[in-house]
Image (cartoon, rainbow, N blue to C red):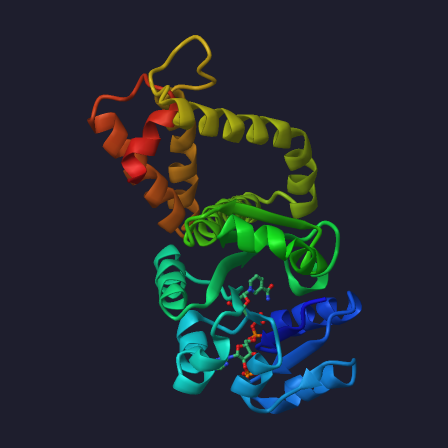
Length: 290
Ligand SMILES: NC(=O)c1ccc[n+]([C@@H]2O[C@H](COP(=O)([O-])OP(=O)(O)OC[C@H]3O[C@@H](n4cnc5c(N)ncnc54)[C@H](OP(=O)(O)O)[C@@H]3O)[C@@H](O)[C@H]2O)c1
C-alpha cells in the first residue's frame, strides 16, 4: 500500500487526510500552521514539521492549499523539489488550466509524476461513494493508483491527458452552479419585490425544473452540433426569449432592483439581435460568449 503525504490541513486537506486514514493508508501531514496537522495526528496521521521530510517518507504527495502560489512557494524550494523526485505529485488545489499545465511541465522537468485534480465536492463528502474528483494527466499514473483516488471519492474520474482539463471542467461546472445561484438571487429579488412568499416561489420552481433541465440539455446538444439556426426542433427562438425577457427589465426598473444580471443578459441578446440572429435558436448566443 502506498504511503501518502497530504500537504495542507485546512478544511479540505484535513478531510482528504481523514479519508486516507480511514482507508488504512500511512498518511503523513504537513501544514504551514502546525496546530492543524497535530489535530490529525490524534487520528493516526504522522505529523511531520518539515515538508521535505514528510515528502521523503511518502510515495504519493497530495497537495491541497489555498492556491497555486501558496503551493509553489513550498514545493519549488530546492530541498522539497529534490524530495519529490520520481514520486507522484497530485495537485488538488483549485487553479486555472494554465496553472495546471505550468505545474505539470515543471513537475515533468524535475522527473516528478503529476496529476492535476479538481474536487467537485465539499469536505463532508470526501471519502463518500458519491464524491466526484476529476483528474487529468497521465492515464497510466491514474490507473496505477486508482485505489488511492477511490479512497477520496467513489467517483474518481480521469478526464484526459491534458493537465488543464480537470481545472477547465471545474470552471465550466462552477459556471453552471453560479449561473443557477445568480439566477436564484434574481428570482428572490423579483419575488420579494412583488410580494411573493419564497416558499411559494420554491413550490412553483419544482414543476418548472424539467423545463429548465430540458432547455439546458438542448442548448448543450445544439452547441455541440453547431445547430444555431431556428428550425422545427427549436424550443424558443431568440425573438421569443427576448420578448419574455422584457418584463424582467421592466420590473427591475420599476422596483429599483440591482440590474447587473439582467443588463448582462440584455447585452448578449442585443449583440446577437444586431448581428441578425433574432429568429435563430437560443444556441446562436454561444457565438457571443466567446
Ligand atoms: N472547502 C471546499 O468545499 C472546497 C471544495 C473544492 C475545492 N476546494 C479547494 O481546496 C483548497 C483548500 O480549500 P479549504 O476549504 O481547505 O481552505 P482553508 O480551510 O482556508 O485551508 C487553506 C489551506 O491553505 C493553507 N495555506 C494558505 N496560504 C498558504 C501559504 N501561503 N502557504 C502555505 N499554506 C497556505 C492553509 O494553511 P494554514 O492552516 O497555515 O493557514 C490551509 O492548510 C482551495 O484551493 C479550494 O478552492 C475547497
